[in-house]
Length: 188
Image (cartoon, rainbow, N blue to C red):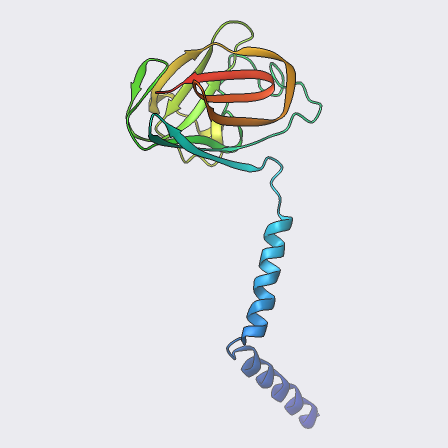
């Protein structure tokens, strides 16, 4: 019995010493490959998109989660009318202006802002720029007190449908597209 007990202790000591040894480059490579594979397989249902460019020589960056229609009714259902929407999926969409800008004729200072939208069944939609730009849960953490700018924008309903939400830097500034919606926001 003592001999068996001693063998177990020796095996335990050996295991502890071996596991505390520095990893060789071979074991590190295997660990790195495993973490890269895990990252590749961890796909977000609504992929993270980043768009960067310039308007009038001023740098702009937009980051958002890009959901798909997937056969769902978007406007008035998945995204209700007259309720603040995070303008994307997952965390809040944000825009980063390198310089002061003018949005729909109204000035906004350089900086990062979350973008929220209030869709309407008819008439103009409200686009909101909020100083809380790093919101993990989007509109669930939205606080109207931190609104920096609200503008009214006219939606355009197109005959073709965009499966994935996109926010592109294009004339007149940036354009939000999803399903049959095209929402152009003037930036200069």
